[in-house]
Image (cartoon, rainbow, N blue to C red; front, side, top):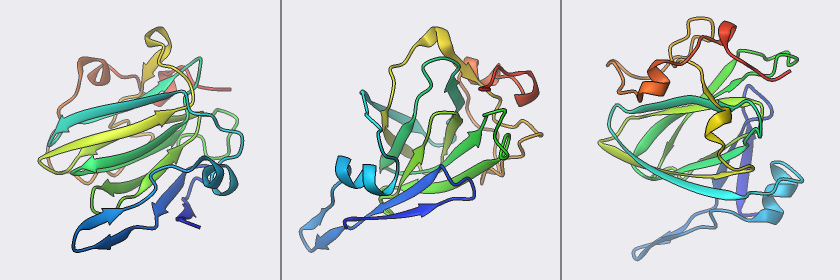
Length: 183
């Protein structure tokens, strides 16, 4: 197999590390293989949209989710380094309100699978970062919601010693206790 899959403290969220073939010329790896993804990560998933963002150091995006048309996201970094976070916001889950985080970078080639039912966000740790992700549903701005990045009830340990740069919608994010969440 060309990938190594590791379950996180939230078992549905997975870290995926591809087998990288490198030499003096550079490197090669499969960034996505539908068969391996179905066998090792999440069966029955179909991706419908690819997204690409570029952000400067200190930008924090999230914690985003859609209250309808929930999106699963397969995320990776192709420039720079980010700290990537998933928060379980399924009210019926024994892990409701718990989070996991991982460093994703161009050097480590890691990807993270964030299934539907989880809020997602990241902060840029390098001078800039380019972030790519596949989604299992389309973006519907009318269904998009944001949980505030520093909600003390979640307690995410962001590896930063600065005030992050936020979009207005993220600065206005709700606390988990006040947010619309999944049943």
